[in-house]
Image (cartoon, rainbow, N blue to C red):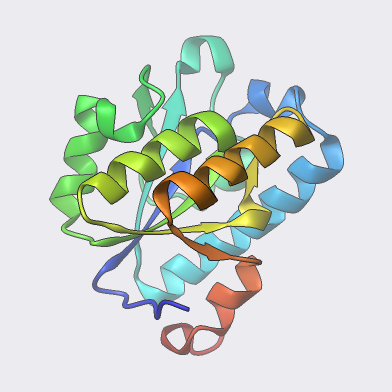
Length: 172
């Protein structure tokens, strides 16, 4: 598994928004929120760069409060599915000079997948923790995982716990 290098690693929180959460399984949302919150605490501990996006916030609402509280900056609003197809989000990613990205958020088969695909096209290393991404249905989530596994050959993690156990994380 890929070692996390703090000076090279960033976390991209993709569209973890209130109205999207309302359309998803409550238990899955609670578990993913817990995992992303833990990851954001780890990011602060490891001094990882964090960027968050919000897909059409006027319609889908703001980032859920538990996650918004852990963000170092306001989320970047976007209307493109891929964060790299939005000028402001793409600039924030490029300006960070990070080459390794941990992607978390919604929805696995749309925005997470398209962002991962575009990051990989730019030669980035992409890590997608399965317990920190969601879709409205289990079927859509599985479609997203299938696309991620087969099409772009990203690095995958079974759980957020792996990130916590990474040597660079020390203890949190």
